[in-house]
Length: 131
Image 1: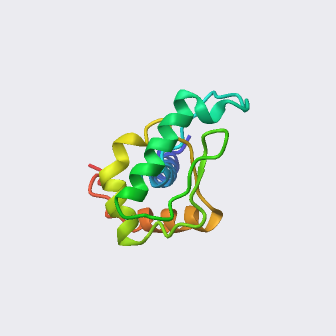
Image 2: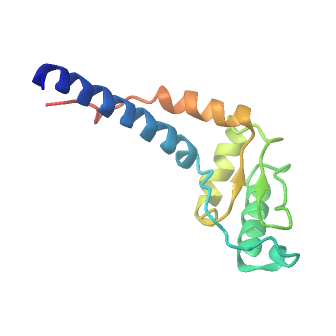
């Protein structure tokens, strides 16, 4: 086994791991935390604890500067495809309401997902040094 080749592969794997971590952080870091709700798709999911949390989050977002933020669907999921997640009012509302988002499923459009990935890939990696 050539130690030099092995070292390069290890660095490539670590770089790939960091990129995967950045992509994962992009999804979580924008406060669009996606959590399994376990509501099971029943017709009463909107009144479940998860549905109540999702509704409280949506109401908070609307009252803090994102007036078109949608209500959750009957399964407690919130689709943000019609929201500009890059706009300052969205970020202000999210800062005010982020604590209510835990456990709420937020669904991003494919375009929104790509925007988040691009944004987080531009974040400086202060801890990406090797030593």
